[in-house]
Image (tube, rainbow over all chains, first blue to last red; front, side, top):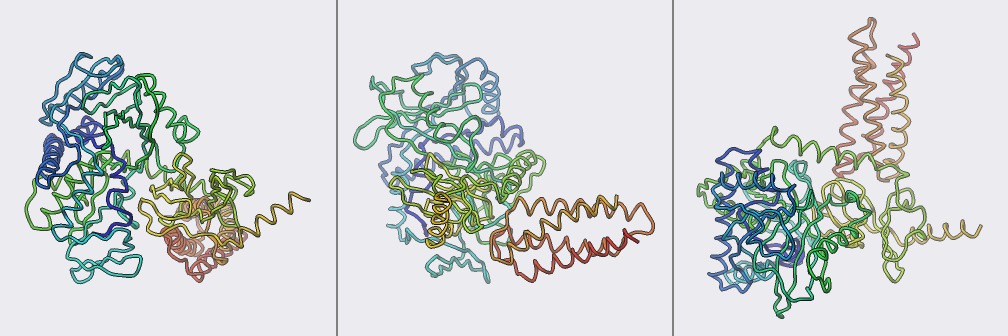
Length: 474
Length: 111
C-alpha cells in the first residue's frame, strides 16, 4: 500500500464518523434517478458495508468507539416536512425500516417540526479505526509505505506498474486507486463536482450533550450534521458539519469560507449553550453526476480499479468499494456491482449535473484573463493573505505568512491548467475546476493533480519587489 | 456574411498572435483568451460554411484551410489544458495555416 501522506491523514481523519444506510444527498434524490431495484441495492449494500465495518472491528478488537446509534433526519421548520415525507417514502421503498413523526422523541434542546428516524445505524472514530485497520493489515503481511507518492499507474502485458516520486516502481496484478478523486486526467472527472464542507467541535457550558445518534437537520436550504463525540481524554464535544461550497470558489452569499465557520458557529450558538469552539476544520468530497459512486476497473480489460464520487458518504462507500473490488479481483459475482460500475454511462440521469459542473469549469477557464489577478504589487499582500499576482508576465500565487515571509508559486494548476484561488480559512491554494489543493509552498495536498505547483525563482520575485519599490519612490 | 466572418477571424488573429507569443516565450497561456480566440474562429468558420452553402462562387479553399487550422487549434488547446508541452512548430504551424486562410479569404472577398 502506497500512501502519499500518512494513513488516515487525508479526508478520512477529518470525517465526523457517521455511518448510515441512507445517503447524504437524500435517498429521495437517488430514487428520482434510479429504478426501485437499484434504490434497494443502495440501501442493502450500504447496510452490508456498515456490518462489514462492525465485523472488522470485532475481528481485530479495534478500539474506535464504534456503536450502533439511531439516525435522525430532522426538519426544523414546516418547510422541510415535504422533503422528509419524500425521504420517508424513498427509505421505505428501499426497504429501510424508518419512522416519521413529530418533535417528540428527538433528543435535541431546540424546537423541531418533524423527524425521520432510522434505527441501527452507527458511529465510530474514523482515524482510530483506519489506523488500527492499517496496523492489522500490516500484521497480516501487507507492506505499507507512508510518505510515498505514486506519480503514475501504467499497464503493460497484463501487469500494473506504479511509479513513485522517487523513481521506484511497484508491479502488481491489480491496482486500486483509492485517492478520492482519481489521479491524473480522466473522463470521470467531468462527472464529479468537488466540494468542501466545514466542521466545528464545540464544548457546551452545561455539559449536557445530545445522546448518541446522528442528527441531520434542515433549516430551509441549509443542512447541518450534529453528533456528540468524546475523545480519549474523556473530553466531550458537539460536532457540527455543514456549509458546503465548490472547492476554490467563493461560497454563495459569503465573502470567503472564513464566514462559513462563523455561520456554523452562529447556528450552534442559537441552539446550544456553546462555551467554546475547540476545533474547526474542512473536508472535501466529490459528488457524482447521477448520485451514485463510480467503482470498478477503469475499463473492461483494465486491472486498475477506481473508486470515486462518494459525496460525503465515503466511510461506508469506501468500505463497499473494497468489497466490490475484492469480489471483482477474485472473480466472485457481486449482485451490487452493476449499480456502481465505473464505466456506466447514464447520460439522461447525469445530464443536468454534468452540464452544470462543466459549464462551471468552462467559466473558470474563461476568467483566466491576463488582467484578472488579485494584487498588482507584492506590497498589497498582507500577513496571512494569499493573492494571485503577475510575476514576469505569468500568473503566480503569492502567500505572505504571519512573519511577513513570502512564498510564491505558479498559479497554474498542474492538473488541467486552471488558476488556483486562495482558501483563507485553511490557508491553501485550491483549484476551482477539479478540486486539487496545494499548500502555500505548492505541495499537493489532495485532488487529481499529481505534481506540486512549481516555485517561482526567488531572484525573479526579488527583482519585481525592487521594481515595485522604485515605482513607489518615484 | 463574409465580412462578418472576416471580422471574427481578424479579432481571433490578434488574440492568436498574443497566444503564440506566450507559447514561443514558454509562458502559460491565459485560458480565457484561448477560449475567446477559439470561439471567434469557430464563429467565423461557421459563417464561412453557411456562405459556401448559400452563394456562388464560394471561398471553398479558404474554408478548407481554416478547417485545417481549426484541427490544429484543437490539438494545441488540448495539449495546453492537459499540461503537455506545446511543440512550438505546432503552434507556429497552426498560426501560419490560419494566416494563409485569412489571406486567401481577403483575396476572395476583394475580388
